[in-house]
Length: 339
Image (tube, rainbow, N blue to C red; front, side, top):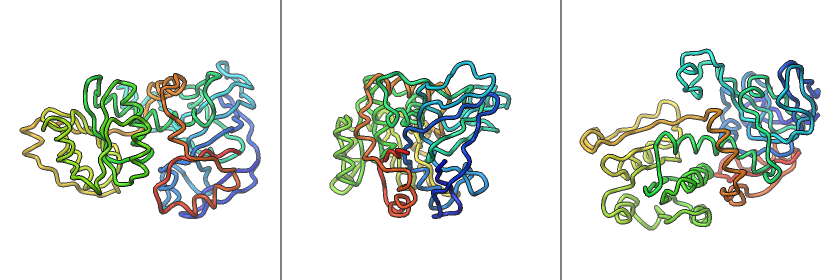
């Protein structure tokens, strides 16, 4: 079969590899669509621990049709349309026993979406493989992984109907946070720099977009919230400056979701006086759990997510190496890779 493998930072290749056969508890998935992702671009530029020892399978958001099942697989059969998450918990560590499976000490991470076939490991088949309804396409279903992260963030922050949320950033993850918030009846304000991205955020359902090129974000958010600030703020950029901004945009008693990951070792000065006396709660949110992945698939199947605005176009499998080479230095919306 054909597969894209990661060899080193900025070195990925389309190669021929043996088509695997499923062992006990595993399924072999014929991939119908995989999505490009910001995490994959970051891994392409600098490597990533989730890839393991090179040469490594590459791509982690994908869906397809089961081609074969291994022994002891009873929930699935050949021909089933499914989407697989890129992780599964171990069930036995300190964090799994407390329901914090996203922090599992032995989280099973899985890649290999940019290929003709993918061997889905037994832990993911057990915990994080889902059949698709007929109305949900493969490219749209592959959004399950990043949407699950967004739903997790919205749930942790307890955003609810009637509240006002501000999102800092107007990229792909911002759009997914926007969809998760809209599903809960939250008023959403998006702060960003790119006019093109802000226009997409408006089309995706943002109540108001604020350009940092034309307005001072803190003043603009306060003007739109009767001087208070947003009930909850989601930082979706991942810089020290925007983490600071998130705290400033939040009302007294509000909640901040620090969703965008900063580079390792980044230190962010925070106004502790404001955190304490305004009783602002800060939440770090990472990854997703099987519960949130299922919630994401259900939301996608409900047709309430504007998936057409989240996926910009399609490329073939053999275009993946050149696509990453040409675009790794810029912000990208998702493309569907069709083997």
